[in-house]
Image (cartoon, rainbow, N blue to C red; front, top):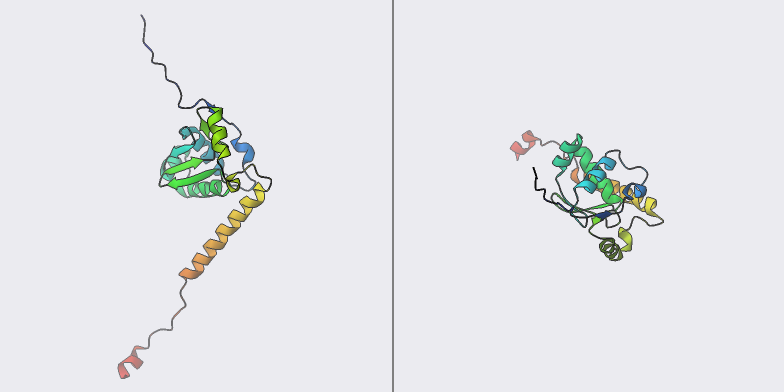
Length: 158
């Protein structure tokens, strides 16, 4: 008996397997499985269409941990958010159809977006510090000055 089997070629056949080499010290533990999950879900060129909820469900972690992991991956310039449920992996770690496609994408990168930079760790730590400063500033803006209680008796006399 002969069974016809359709040959399925993968969307991409070449990728750099060095993603974990470049991860900075101090990343939250959830960032590693989230990064590996994105590497496994990517389209050629590194685009990933997935929600926080889907990642959380498939990895068995909370959405807040996924959010924090994606923030830190963005601080490290390993992942960029393109929109709701759309992320892009850095060309330095993304999968492509050919090595030439990856080299072309890397050549088009801004130097500030590269994480194979000598001061990579310092830039990552500065991104975290800036994020914390921004959070503190927003929290201070949300707090309004406490107003004295209204004296209704004095208002009635007017």
